[in-house]
Length: 329
Ligand code: AMP
Ligand code: MG
Image (tube, rainbow, N blue to C red; front, top):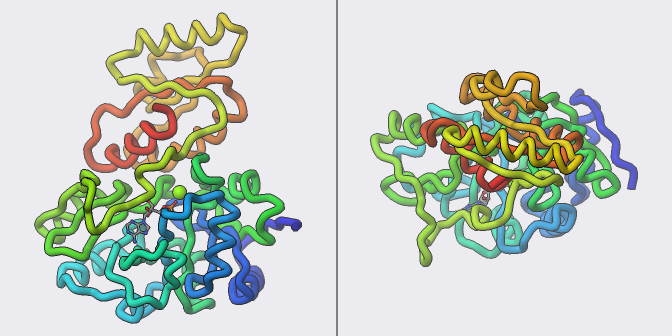
């Protein structure tokens, strides 16, 4: 199969809709990472997504809908605070997990009783979702375990020959996947950290927990147990207080005739002037936005990516560190 990349226009959106309505799958931009999109009501489309990614069969998919879509047709909204969260954070990088009404097929939720739903803010994605007017399931558009794609070319690198079309909506601004929040109980619970932080959710709902993923939990995020986000080259991860070890590791790789790159925030990069660097930026937002892009750049030019951890795990850094530990740790 030939894979084409097309800028988002009304014409390419119409082509994507036709493919999706026929049970096919396409690459789709969102404000977090690129998604591999299929019709959530069509079990054949869902099967194609799992096959194209090599995704474990017990890891459910997130349904994406247009901002004017009536969520109550898809899920039970049992907690009043959900309306406040919708008002505050959607469209945007917040996914909420509800009890499903079964419109999205059971294959997409791996037979579970819950459904994760998101309303992306990316303009081109909204155009597609408006045109198709049904729930589109879309995991990140990478091969399972590989780093998530944040450009159309990243999607092409993993999916060429497997899908007919990638809609190009530019580089994803958010850069890490959405926050996944269980909203089935009286206190919302973060299942996967992202750009909508615990503090932001608390400012709306008063309380918010972070899931510890206990055995026997009713709602868990199966995805968090898998190897994830890994670039194709060797990696290492050190703390900010281990810069001597970072330098020693760098020199050791070089002495073996291989190419090391240090991936870190700008304030650390400034201390390693003159070495091979993958600079993540200054602010937490910038660092999240650049993380996957730098990992995917790094796997092409480095034999070893030596990553330096963030100064703490607060706010957006919680989501960044979660990805960094899995990709490089
Ligand atoms: P990805 O599509 O690659 O961004 O991964 C989606 C994430 O959402 C994974 O961590 C899934 O385990 C999680 N997820 C999707 N659906 C559900 C659900 N119904 N309940 C809990 N977690 C979910
Ligand atoms: Mg993923």
